[in-house]
Length: 321
Image 1 (cartoon, rainbow, N blue to C red):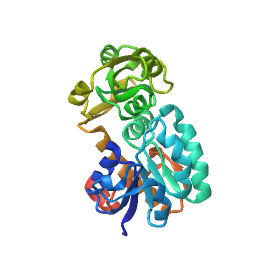
Image 2: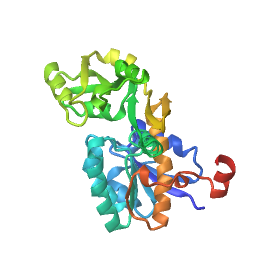
Image 3: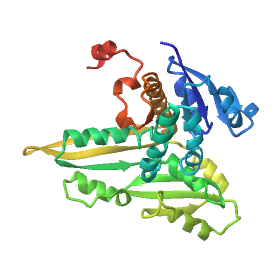
Image 4: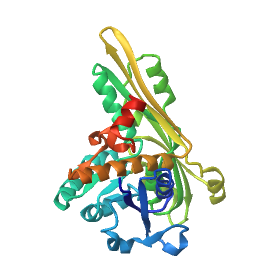
């Protein structure tokens, strides 16, 4: 099988994680990293993003590593017109709209776009689908954290007046205990989580104005219990550089009169590196869809598990079935 030629757009934590993941997958070839920064400042094979169309014929799949708050919505139509893409877009409330936009463009241009890869959306989404399918008589619960959220931290950093920002997602321990005790609860994502935000201000706005914009941000913070803390740059650099995160999907159901619990849990030292690993496996799937001429937008719901793997069908049956 010939190697899959990929490009990376963006070289933050996620883009660097994709580059690392590619090094563990010998069926890929990295054409280059495309960045808004000076390419010479990066210790990798890098090009300015303005030159990306020069590589259109060299790239099979483009992995988009920009932020979900602005980068992906502002560039998705351009990239999906010219390339097959994989993204880690995590604005849950906009994902259906995102899918519809990309599905139309990629079908017209004979490309493939796999959206919302990562662990949530992504891996957890598939597990929720499995658990609902296997246990139709039941209730599902998803809890995140404690840990650093990439998407929400990126959203915080887009707020005028924020020099540095990090957002931690914490599960509502009281609600978790009630569920574990078998009690009936009124579960919503908003009730299930607390969001703690740590900000270093650039002093161009008042702290109160910054806080109000954050806690009222649609799709990210509005409706959640959100705490905003303003700290010094030194404290931020000392205490808020970890990238760990995690969470779990739980479904409590019944098979006749018997209870069944389905649970999958992730504990990640590096949220972006795991997210990147899912994106790379999804790029393999995108390439296979492309070869099948199965154009259009896809989510992980649409991806056959075998398309994610380097193994042949025979190897998978022999080793995993």
